[in-house]
Image 1 (tube, chains in turn orange, purple):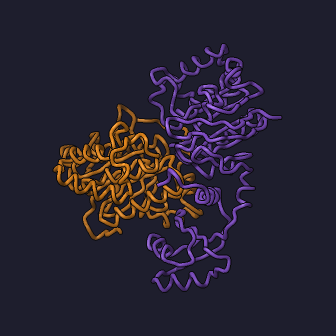
Image 2 (cartoon, chains in turn green, orange):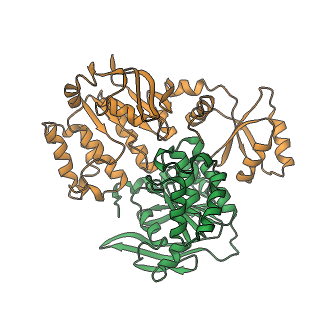
Image 3 (cartoon, chains in turn blue, red):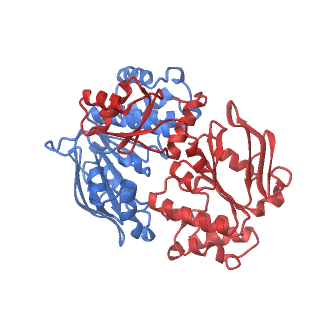
Length: 253
Length: 309
């Protein structure tokens, strides 16, 4: 649950990212609080990926003040990387490694000791009911299992923030809902969740959502307040109202 | 008039039944949707229909041509948009389109009318490398390339996956126009709400067809009482509903939880009392009509749950 009295875990003020003359992110400002589920929506090409790459320490902003988990996005990108987790639909786990090998690999990357990895992975494999699949290659698992495992691996080193980039794309409707229960549980444990999705019902599961249009944040509020202020039925309608006029100008960076 | 006829087609990879005894027919000019999650067999089926993969058993014909025996005659009649972006990222937009026109022995000019509405939206970027387009634009270019030889049957494998809600609406508007041209369109999608835009849909899971019907029929045949339940705290509401003895299913749908009761004698008042005892406030419970997603989830639950986490 959100506690706005606390210090924000992500603070972004006037963030700008330019590629040549093209402004991919135009003065973005927002604050995200510990344990919050923050939905980051926008049309394809609106600038979401650019912003996420900066927040993950993978790309330098052009200007603006950006702090992630207390670290500066210009000079402390390595510390940022140690304090976050990341998963996406496109890249999550290594297909040619087994379930356990993937966990061990990620644990190792984040500097966990082998004994920590052993005990935590046993716990994790139990929780996910994957006892019989510990030594099975990832590529032979159904997508829904993979995505649930990928999420658990992304928070295996107990990061302060986890970035989820379209984590449920193509997943069946029941697994999609199980996945969201895991997100809720992680947020309940204090992990801040930063999530993008094209399923508009999922946007309504977030504590707050922002909607990007043409490199700018066009709206940011709780789902209920957005629905109320746009006088529509659901977030899908809010999204279409905001994003539709801008669609032809989309460009990817 | 039948455009596509599939009879008892099966296909396995090692120990996975990708398609398990699948049969159906699609009429000429029909907009037919396959709705199902990743791994349900949609891509395997589409590859068989487009002669890119051989079925192990069974038979499939498209426009009267056998997909195995007559593949050479069949291919010029087909437009295929694979699920993965399969254009040349190192060619610019216009070069990709020219390439596809030329391998089918035609020109952009000859068939420009068919793609005009779609291509016009990406024409301002025609000198951009295809690899540098955004998702929505890649999808429009891929559709243009699939259409440039004026196919009779268009096969689209998840054209809207990963595409934003606005571009999805626009894409379906384009499909409606193509249908008006008389093209048979076979399309797959994981977005359940898109099912409502098809003439008929097949719900597919674990390589089997759960149901084939017009979307309205699927909704009309939903067998349970369905309620939308709302309260101040959705997450706690879900936990509370799981503890309610009368709960059959409770799934979040946006800001509501869709609830089905175990028995026909269920009374709304009982649930109301239960939830207020749990400390819920601003409780709203109303009977609703199901959407396709409710129907799909009901069918998923009633069929075998092997392979299911």
